[in-house]
Length: 185
Image: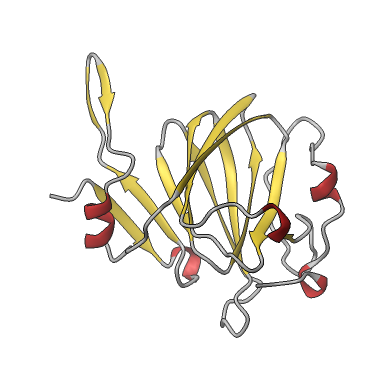
């Protein structure tokens, strides 16, 4: 019996999925499977992950919008502490939703996961004082293959939530280009 439910094509964008795990809880706490290959296959998600990553960020940190150009990755992302607003932007040339975005709030309490397939730029904004973010990737990180789109590109027009602190971006993310000028996969 599957321990997940999957919302396919989240936000009307083909390939994006929101995954909710079954949580078993009692007075001692809870237990949940955060990943089960068989359950994913039954849901039509035949992905082999090869790398797990984890980051810690503080409120107002905005990471992204990132992708790899020649070695695109599918990512399965979740939050284990705090909350983030997680965003995927369709950068698949020829896609009917090219340039469209979808965002979801991921929290330690809702335990939702967001599947961001190849062909999407990905980023997140930390909403809580601190957030720990975990993600699986189906290809390795290639440091000389990084691409990105500036988070506030007006043609994409992402509705980032307000936070009561200034946004904190890396130097690399601050100088990313808009979608129409970015080198895409």
